[in-house]
Length: 117
Image 1 (cartoon, rainbow, N blue to C red):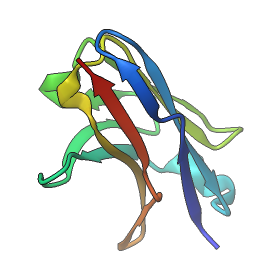
Image 2: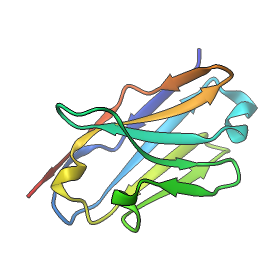
Image 3: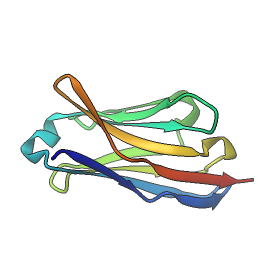
Image 4: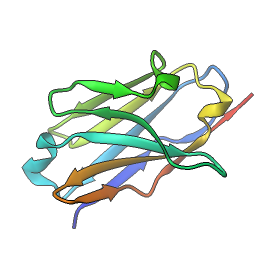
């Protein structure tokens, strides 16, 4: 069964850092052929695109996190990490990773990030 599991969330003060990880299982060799993305959802707000890493390793970020967040992937471990630096209170949200496989989008269960001012 295809599964994504996020980890690494927590409570941090503004200016601090966190490293989120998205681990994929049951993807086999397909993982390296798929882009992996992250969304976040703050309380009372719609889910927002954060970043995506393509199979080539190229990345794309929403403007609000450019220069602060960095994506990386390890195809052998089937993980994608989101390094978040200089965190701001407005980064507070539940962070979800996803992979598209065929016509279906697979989501993780999310990990909470809380940034205090």
